[in-house]
Structure formats: structure tokens, C-alpha cells
Length: 368
Ligand code: IPM
Ligand code: MG
Image 1 (tube, rainbow, N blue to C red):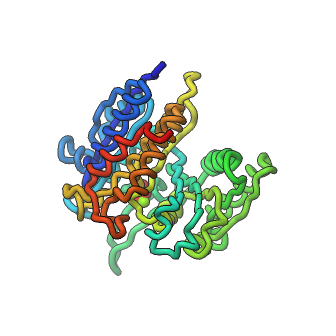
Image 2 (image 1 turned 90 degrees about the vertical axis):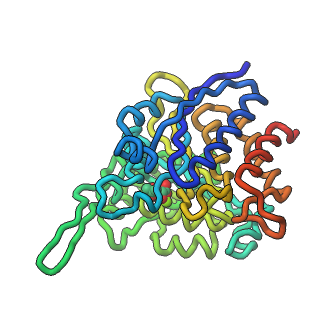
Image 3 (image 1 turned 30 degrees about the vertical axis):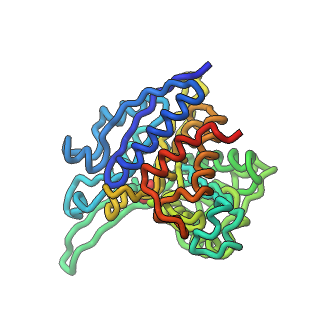
């Protein structure tokens, strides 16, 4: 028997709405093929919310997203709202949503499809077979530390941001990383800058302490600058990578080049399991690419990162593993058949966002 679920959709700005159309198409195809009913509610976030309501996310919309079983987000931001002097910025909506819903861990799988090993700017022999899960801490660190402000002094302007981590914030995300490693190749690389930062020295101690509960998982500590190098020189040895908010933001953009394009990668942001006894874990699912204002509205955006985010949602929040695999298989088949947007099109002519989305939707359930 099919199940039902309520999904909040937050298309946002730039290419967000375009890729969200394809997420919907994917959901419809999955619902039809597997007999599930997905109901959706659309909410405003980012610049779209600023234009409509003067804030990047209304409190009631954050709460509304939280009452759904899961939420899908496109992207936020764009030149229209880039004025640095402005108090309201699109990105505040995303940060507020993560914080309001307690989504402290951001899961960013970086896997290289065999058919795309040549699409990466890194040599194919280096990227082939790469399969990394980055677990990025998402509600702490520089993104949320106070004070954060700018001021004027006699000699010029000054500004401060605060990098703060508490033990419990490190422990819970580390624990999650070790749990995931158990379902994978049982290796965790914890990334920090312990040779310079106090927060990193605390990070390293706490991760080490948590690791004692996981003697079956191998732990290594890697400095972030070295990690930036390892990711392009020898990424194959990494399994689960766990790191703080800002390092994770930077390293996952870098890691996306291994997969061939940032447009391919999905992410899941999760918090503590629900306390209502349900097995479902709320999550916010989004591609890791941004709003890409330079190509917005042109049908050129790669919808795969968004579509694979739907797959992650089916698996992680709705417990629908077969359905998640069917979406992933449909994406692989479409890419293998050469149905690709410009960012990964090799010799074949580039297809539009909707052509790729439609091809994926048609192929759902066809692989036997
Ligand atoms: C990401 C994005 C966001 C972040 C921005 C849009 C606030 O870059 O999800 O990686 O820095 O977390
Ligand atoms: Mg980022």
C-alpha cells in the first residue's frame, strides 16, 4: 500500500524555482509509479520573501515548514538583494530556517558516476570511484556566533565575527558521523585547524572522546588546509568527513568539482529525531549549488542536484529506500544516455533544465 507525506517546497531565488519544478515532476513520477500521495505546500524564502514580506523568512513559514514531513529548498540570493548595507539579506532566511528547525548536521554526499569521471577538471584516475560523505556542522561556528558587526574607528572601519563551539554541538554531529561510517567503509576524517584555533582544539578532543564509543571505526584528524589539498590530490581514501560549519561550506564546494559539476550534488540537513515516536526524521533537502543568477530563467541550470535531493529525502525522511534508488537510477540512466545540461554535456548538445527533468521522470521505475 502506498503511503502519504506532506512536503514543504521553498523554491527561493535565481535558478531555485526552475529546479524546483523538476523536483515536483520527480515527486509526481515517484507517487504515480509507487502509489504514494505527496501533498505539497509552497512557502517563500530568501529574496522572494523579502520582496513579498520585507523579511527573508517569516516565523510562521519556518514553523509551517517544520510541520511537514520534510522540506525541499531551491536556492536563495541574488544581485537584487546584495546591498551590503542592507539589514535584510536572502541568506538570513536559510540560516534562520536551519536554526529554527534545529538542523545541526548537513549531509553532503560526493560520489562520482563512472560516466562522469571525465567531466571533472581533476584527472579521471584521481576522481574515479570517489565516494565521500561530508557531514558539516550547520548551526554553530562563525555563522551564528555573536557578536557579529561592523563599526567605525578613528583609523578606519573594523568588523568582528565570532567563532564559538560548545562541546555538545561538536559531540552530536561527531556521533552522527560515526553512525554513518558504520553503514559505509568505517572511516572518519575529522577536519579542523587545531594548530591555530581554540575551537578546533576543542573539536579535536571531543571528536576523539566520541570515537571511543566506535572502536570499529577508524578516526584520523586532518588540518583543513591539508584537506583542501588531499581533496584534489587523493580523495579516494576518504569515507566520512566531519567538520565545522565554515570549513564544511568551503570544502564541499571544492569537493563538488570531483563529481564533475556543483550542479549534481544534493544535501540533507537533519536534526534530532522526532520525539513523537514516529520513525520519520524531518529534513531540509537542497542542492548545494547556489541561486546562479547569471543563468537564472534561461533553462540552463542542472536540475540533478535538486532531483537527487528528492531521492535523499525519500530515503532519509520518508523511509522510502526503493523509491530513492529508483530516482538515483533514473538520473544515472539519463546522464549515461547523454541527456545533460551544459555544465556536464561533453560532445552531445546541451539539454535544458526541463528536458533533463522530464527524461529522469520518464525513467523512474524503468530499470529492472
Ligand atoms: C550552502 C550555502 C549557504 C551556506 C549560504 C547560501 C548561506 O553556501 O548551503 O553551502 O553558506 O551555508
Ligand atoms: Mg556553500
